[in-house]
Amino acid sequence: MFDPTSLIPTEELKAFRDRIHQVAKEKISPQAALVDEEEFFNREVESLLWDLGLLTLTFPEEYGGIGKNKTAALCIAVEEIAKYCASSALLLIIQAVGSFPIIHGGSAELRRTYLPQMSKGRKLVAYLVTEPSAGSDVSGIRTTAKRVGDHYLLNGSKCFATSGGVAGIYSVLAKTSEEKEKSSFFLVERGVQGLSVGRTEHKLGQRGSNTTEVFLDSVQISAENLLGIEGEGFLIAMKDFDMSRPAIAAQALGIAEGALETLLQSAREKQNLQQPVKELPILQAIIADSATLIEASRGLVYRAAILNDEGKNNTKLASMAKCFAADAAMKITAEVIDALHILDGYGSLKISDAERMFRDAKLTQIFEGTNQIQRLVISRQVLKEWI
Image (cartoon, rainbow, N blue to C red):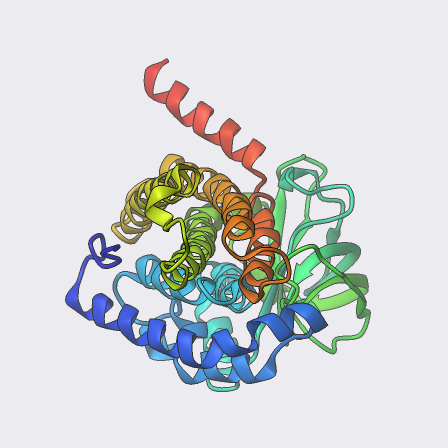
């Protein structure tokens, strides 16, 4: 039905896509429902993702990265895994997001010290930005980092930290000036005195991802753990979004594809009904609209990813992709549930899978900037081109 490789830039990435698809279908899919039901972080899947090299895709080549087409490769892997388990796909995204300030802001010595710990040592990294009083407004954070001699003291609290309870390294955004947007990123290791993990959140969707509070109480770190130039953390975060938003869009795309495939499988099994699917206009409309939204989402996702890999500005397209694909996933998963009720009735395993995908899709509208924020970004970028 679909040609999932039509927008993939190289034959190597097409082969990569086929390999990830097979592994996700055979090894990740069978555990997805249980992980969601029991809300646990799946260490077996984590180990599999390390074995496949998927948790270092965006790293420099000498530390396990793929070299070219990093964003496209990340989106491909996320899309294929999200078809079966959005929680597992999220682990790839947060590893890329959390390591971005380290890779692009860390000194050469810091990268030589910590990137091997993350790649060969298989340490997960968490991204500590969101706070109780600063969600979509990254510039509104209250966590502070005060310079004292050759070190900094970090104080504050972070919430909704994906991988917060399982990470070994944290990229922490903290204010280093009274000016609103003057913040900085710091590398903080798990186990340092003053850092503690709070409660684990119970979420609507993507319940197999680990999401926690993290507290910083006079955490002392070396000044060498500053990532980038002091005061430019906000700029690093914005550049990180140019990579992460296409990846979130790819996750939404994968969820939508998984839902539609669930419906089509059910429809194929029901061909012997007294009234075949092809004679049910309601189902035909849902299938047509879903397939169209999926293809439109795919175009935005990979255009945004390829632009980022080419070093070109993709801010507008990244926000368009994230906003459109997430909204599309919500619409598709909701309508697939309705269609499955028509086909299968209540209590079907396929309906249960579709309901999980519906809950998973909702989160794609929220993190990495809500879709309301994406519309503001898109509008600003369009107006900048015209005014």
